[in-house]
Length: 405
Image 1 (tube, rainbow, N blue to C red):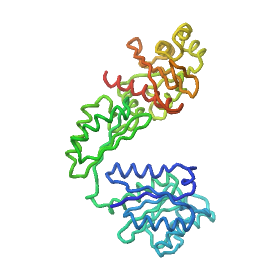
Image 2: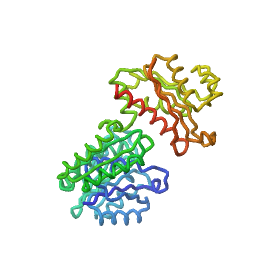
Image 3: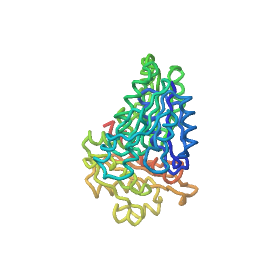
C-alpha cells in the first residue's frame, strides 16, 4: 500500500512557500502508524499537472493532494482532474450557498462552486474552496485546499475518515515517539544502535532539531510487545533526558513542571535577546509562573539594572560564569522569582576570539538564596541556531532540576 502526498503550486517549486502541508500530513499519518512512500510537488502548468497526476495514480494507492483549488487563473487542478477522470464541472447550489453564507457574493464564489460531478465533496468549514475525493481502480485520491488552516480542518473532519476506511488494518504500524533534551544526536547514536541490535525488527529513526532530538520507533501491530520492550530499554537508560509523552517541546515540559511546582521564574538574557522569554510566553497560561525577563544586551544595562560589578566584567569578560552568576543575583534582587536563568554569549557572526570563539555561551540556573549552577558551553551553527540551542539548553537544564525536587 503506497501513500503519496502531492502539493500543487509554482510558488512551492520556486521555494517561495514552504510545503508545511506535506510535513503536517506526513507527521499525522506516521503517528497513526502508516508509512509515506513519496512527496511530490507539481507545477500549475496544465499539461505538466495532468501528466504528473497520471504518474501519481499509476504508482500509488492513496494520494493526498493540496493546493490549486482556488478561483484564480492559475488554479487549474479541477480542470485537469475532470480530464483525468473523464468528468465535468457542475455548479453545486449547496456549495455556493455555504460559501455565501459566510462571505459576500462575488463572481469568484461561482467559480468555487463548480466541482467535478462524480466526486465526493468535502466541506470547507473555515474557507471557500471545497475539497473532493475520487476512487478509481481501487485507488483513493483526495484533493484539499492549499491554505494550511483550511487544509487541516478538512483533513481531520472529512478526509482522514475516508482514508481510514481505505487503508487495510494489516498495513498499520504502531509508533512510539521519544523526545530527548540536553543530548545531541551524536551522543545518543551509539547507545541507540546497541539497543536496536536487540530488536532488529523494530524500525528506528533519529531526527535532530536545535531544541531537542526525536527518536521514533515503529513496528507492525503484531510486534507491539517487542516495540514496548525497546521503548522501555531506552527509557531506563535515558530517563532523566526524556520529555513527558504529551510534551513535544522543552518549553512545554518546562511549562508543565513549573505549573505543577507552583513556582515563579525570571530570566536575565544577553545574547539570547529575549528568545528565552518568547519560548515561555508562546504557551497559554505561562503568566502563572513567569514573571519576566531583563534583556541586558549592553554592559551598561547589566551594571545599572542587574547590578553586575564592572570589575567582574573587566576581569573575566562579559561571557563568563562569573558574570552570569552576578546576573542571576541581580534578577533575584529585582523580582520575587523562586528560580532564575541567565545567559550571556557570543552568537556571531563576529565578536569571537581564540579563547572564546563564536558559539561560546555561559548559562546559569539558580534557586533564590540557594544553589547556583553555571557553566560555559559551545554551540555550533549560525547566529539563530546558537541562540535557539542555548535558550533550549538553559530551559531544559532548569526543567531537569525542577523534576528532581
